[in-house]
Length: 264
Image (tube, rainbow, N blue to C red; front, side):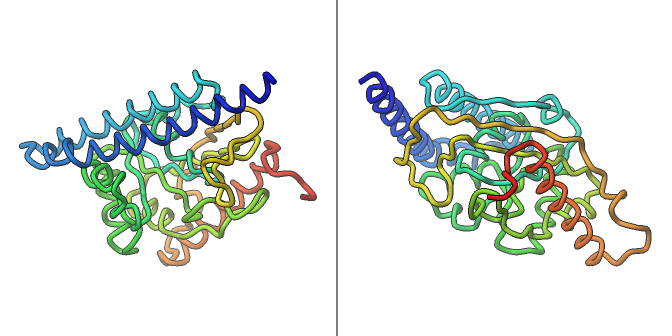
């Protein structure tokens, strides 16, 4: 009986969290975004919007923990709060990955799928925050470099969408490598795990696990791209080498940390 009550409560709290997220997104698009457009100073507007988004997601993650929906374990969070811009490259097991990372990084810019620019709950947020669309490869790199030069860390999931299955990643796209080489900033690998699985590519929001899910975030040591690109190497070859190396390292660490299981 207690187990059923606990499941019912977490189902209700999960539904409430998604509902509040949607309502806040709509309100932001309807009211805050028009105000942002008339803000006289672009740099200060961008900073305020970024801070508001950070604190909103921080409050949302805190609420989901307090209501028993999820648990969060973070190792190395101080590296994400550094004032030095980095490219945060993470695997993407769940829908909540970006929510958790935005709650941990005060000055962050996200790379988002082009579909989100027309999402009624997200379009005002991604525009006001000047997030980077992945629709145009050339524009993507230019916009990303500009955000890094302005002091913002870049969050990117190089798989492009949520991981296809446990123990497997989508092949990494090379956009983050081109950006790192162009901007000359370090790559900050981040490992994300969710146990039991929740909000995966194969699950709907209402597929609530039988117990609170635990999200584990491990922030690894930053990697300088100069270590991976030999002098004089053509840009395309250097980007390919950086991408291949980072993908291999993240995959290996997922096994080393026990997030991926050998033999499954």
